[in-house]
Length: 168
Image (cartoon, rainbow, N blue to C red; front, side, top):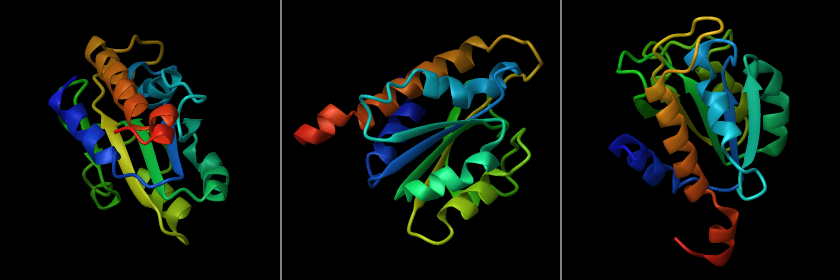
């Protein structure tokens, strides 16, 4: 597991329940599918987090996420932050203005503001650097590895059996 994903894993351990994890991406556009692909690898029955695959339209899920009133919101998406393909970064909402580029119509910052606007919610965005987003293209090997490692880390952090037993 990369050092960046280990750091993300440590940071996510501070998340308060309830937790909502939202995957964003376009499955038809190569690496842009990364957020949704992470959710595909998670077992919702084992996790103590609500999973929402928002696809290309996160704005359609503002209401459902707000109803959950998460204390912790984690958004996973392909984000161009100028790094090598497959690099992963944990970003806070204040970093989502000019420093990130998303291919989706609603900016991640607006999504977070609309979901968390009227209740206490800590929001995180996990960005996976894409190589390309060509229609019908294959997911880059390094992006695929990042998706797998990130899913493993999230599974460990939010394992419902571990949390119910009080194990760290």
